[in-house]
Length: 77
Image (cartoon, rainbow, N blue to C red):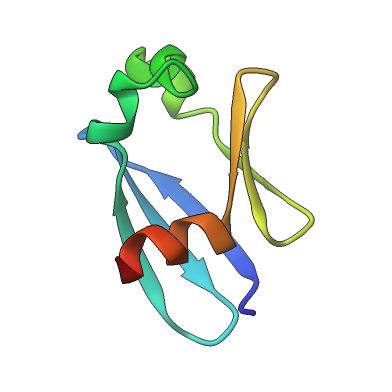
């Protein structure tokens, strides 16, 4: 499984995710903001606080997290 090297949050609630295999993913979080799990990220200032932990998880403080596995699974659907 690829590892996350860097994540860049954008003003339109998308994430640019850079992987160690030289691939980049633009992941659109807008539809996910309607769920209870990610609703706190509607606030753009909170959304932009994303960081990478353990090379495979995107974390927003204590609000929520999502793994690269989950992102890739959603993209493949």
